Image 1 (cartoon, rainbow, N blue to C red):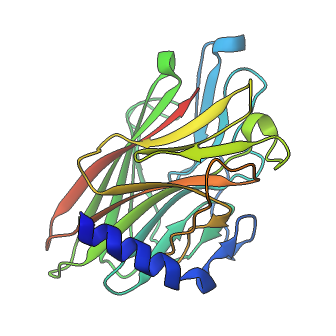
Image 2: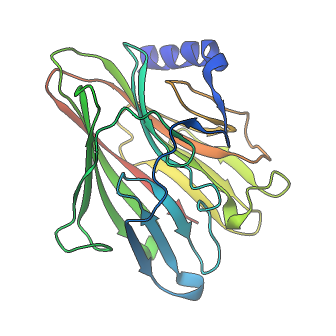
Length: 257
């Protein structure tokens, strides 16, 4: 774990020239259209979110009338082959490297139901990312069980990111939004209002939670000093050595608080 932390810090310092502005487009914009929408409760207990066919959560509303992601519709994932410094990214409106094959969606009971599984393979065939979505409405929680399969005979070091450009209560205004982080989580919030936290559900696996004003693209590790009074976002990464022809699974959790 110490070695991974050192590598993360070193490359983060060297890679600043490659990062993109938070609201800038990177690559080809991905889909921002909701394929499934989940709604529970009403008024102060409303918990409504939607996911694209590619596995991006582009809307999160809770309580009623308070939207936290839709303003910029920038949320999703990146697989970084750190050994080769090759990134496979889909952050919906923020960045899409275009090196993913079409998604395979498994949803036996139809749209807006569970179970929901979204599987994608990189265009070079090296990696397959599987996302299994679930929720706990009583806790205002979305869970994403994430599995990365290494389809090669090599043993690359991999980082898998989850990123969201947050606009708490529809704001996204640096004069009102605050951000902070811990060892396992990063979150944005409105003082005396609502907040959204991104956290690991698999703390035993190497991970890093960060607040950012930059899109964490191209295997970069942007961050800001916290607490931060900014127009920003959060990301969580998990790092591991991918054994040949094997899979690694971990859980990412969003929670409205």
